[in-house]
Length: 173
Image (tube, rainbow, N blue to C red; front, side, top):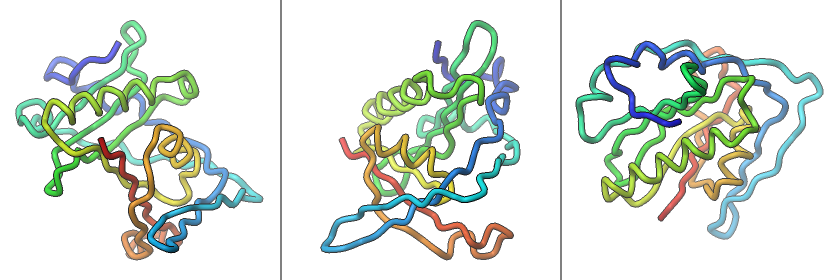
């Protein structure tokens, strides 16, 4: 069941935030006006986890922002955070599914909810950014129908993860 985040379930936001496997790296390439990519498999895969985030009431109160949570009964096992972006797209700021629930269609259902929300807000499509080392997520976005719109090798240059490259994905309606 997917529900919109409210003040009553706001504490569930970080529950699906679990580590994920880093098994490869995406290598985007821009040629003749088209983005493609290849995938490198890492010799030594590793696990990565993003820090829990403070979520504020703006995602409940503001019309151009939303969070949707996926529940299995009382357990929150997925989330997607959206906002209307300046360029007319809905920015998927965060999407995550609990490790034990991955590969069960929850991410696609959350993305379907994001599409519905963006269409209700008369936006042109969805956009998001992820790191090139999150190959599992990149494969998911490509399967869902996103295309690469750009890459940025400086976005993370001031962090210990300086070897990571940002990849921007778009899903146009």
